[in-house]
Image (cartoon, rainbow, N blue to C red; front, side):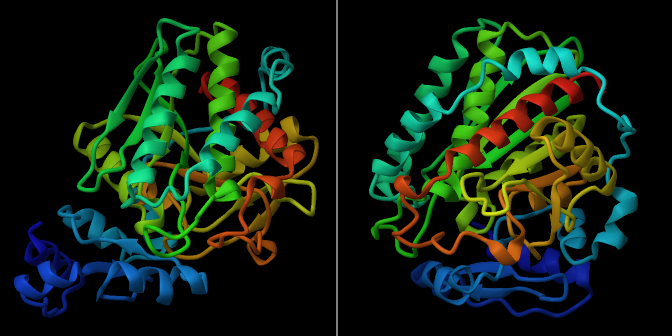
Length: 371
């Protein structure tokens, strides 16, 4: 890792002078450079400090240690309003237009397979991105995604490797255009160390099985989209959006045309009985469209909330200039109290909430595939 490069780029983008620790100190202590807000110039922390000082206190952060793109670093130091003009502009429909087609597929969705998949995911001691079981869980998920996708020979499944062992996973259902509609969820979990018990049932096993069930429904239904659809499972989100950062950096370099990315981080806990659409660090036009789709396919208007800087993977797409939205199980102040603890277990999942998110996901993919 060229730590000094990241620091110089960050300093240049912020017009500040920032002193990096020595290469020897960084190497021996495994220091990482993170940002916790637009105004934070960056601070060097250990992996343990990430959890103790930030995750455990519900403070979001982005690990920028390996970011080389000065434009991205600059965007990470600007407000939503300042960044709005540089997000790829997309015109979204003002209403849903493919209800019969979507409902036909939604009728095939259930929580049966997601329950089985989540049982397996939570049986791993932890899915921490630096743990051996975190890598094993990702391998199991990759093989499961391939098995589900095999119902449609057009779907391809691949892994994205990172500087850490846990890969991300991408399944692609090709359309008649190369324009991308993406749904994603992170696959890792954490309760601090790479060895402590971290079942991560809700955070984010629930989101992972939600989009996997949507993939199953579309694959078995032989769905043929206009726009290409991708399903993403990101490694290393709990370490500072590491997997999604790499994916969207690659997409920016490759000039991918992403029309929409909807992130789902936790879908299995909802005292209110309706989904929440978050409004910060997202694209406002896409978010408005997501609200329309969610109202149609979940049966009620979603709540609105904010989760702050670097709270989940939509921030990676946003910082690379792609339109992103974030759909969650509840408003931030009513978040699941068990996340990031050993109490985030399979038995605590509310399956009616997961199914609600599955229905939304299938509905969104059908509607957005025609944009």
